[in-house]
Length: 140
Image (cartoon, rainbow, N blue to C red; front, side, top):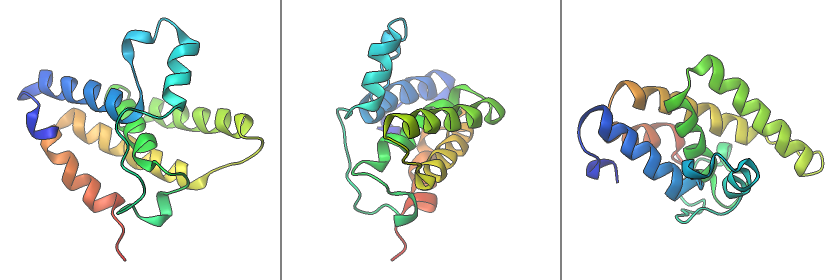
């Protein structure tokens, strides 16, 4: 998908919106309906990748790409100083939702996603596969 994006800022925006919807269930057109928007983000996105190939340090469910891409999206649109508290707010909400389960792996995964989103804002979607391979891949 990264190679399909048009060049420049417009291509980066297109890519982030597309990958956010396909891989993390972020449908920006539903932001005006917050409950539906949050349910979609917590649910299963159209494209899922499983856990194969992901470093065990960041895997706590059957679709770590969803969490990673959600925070690539956040890191693209918000500076890290705002995106990081949003990550922790999301994790606190999950802690409440899942009956007291805190996931340090999700925090690591989300922090990596935020960093990559910030990089993506300044560079190009073509770099994301290399960032993913360098930071998320299983080294075993």
